[in-house]
Image (cartoon, rainbow, N blue to C red; front, side, top):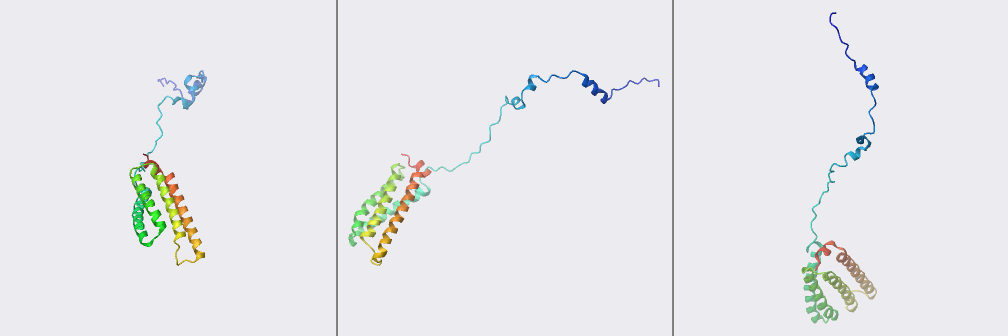
Length: 184
């Protein structure tokens, strides 16, 4: 054993040496800050926002186009009704047909020009139609209906017309398409 062996430190022996050293101070500036604040200075990515490409509601489409075509066809019907009223001597048709023709035609033109007043004019046109249908059913009753059924016919026509008027009014007042299209 001529060789001299130097004893190698064993890992277990190092632990007592490490424990014997002074403890590292726990109050360093980096350790006092919470972990969340260490990353605060770094730029944070903005949350991802997905953009849904929605079709624009501006323009004469959907229900607005339907009501525009309906008014155009109604105006043609009122011209026919006016000239037929001469042969039948129908007084309500002679009075209301020119008024409703003018209102229907004005609705079509004002919607085409995207005027704000078109929605109120269309509601007025529909209200005039309800008044006409009620007056016409009272003045010109159907001979096939008995007197008892006539009251029910007038009331059902009036209620149906009012319901239609309310629905059309709600559409023209609350519709996003109407608000974005009729802006002038």
